[in-house]
Image 1 (cartoon, rainbow, N blue to C red):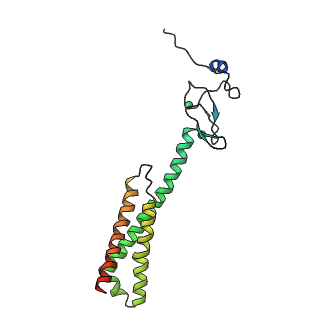
Image 2: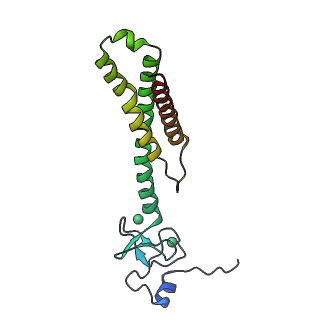
Image 3: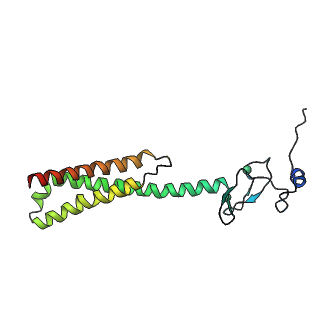
Length: 169
Ligand SMILES: [Zn+2]
Ligand SMILES: [Zn+2]
């Protein structure tokens, strides 16, 4: 059988660089000696795996990824919120534009308030949250785009409605 060198604890000891973590190998690279400990999960990590942050914080790739996923979980919530608002203001838009609301609500003030809370406010908030959920540096799942674009279309309709109202008024 062919001889294959097996890097073991003795190799690291000879290197003499990782005295404190002597005899340990990287949690992700069994052939690499441990140089740091992950500040979050305490896993031993090699030079390649070490994500170094200021004030001597070292994080392993798994914990970096977990932190990234947490960020995207927040964006997911924002996108879902924007989708709910877009649904709400679409329904609002339909009842307003079809004149259904005007038939149900006779009072001018109530009608204006209904217009505000059924369409104007959810549309503006939804556009803000939806566009805010887009992270240009990261990959955006389709629903993030749908949430933003849907709200922007409603916003466009709202803007168009205001222009028409101004022209006619
Ligand atoms: Zn870790
Ligand atoms: Zn490693």
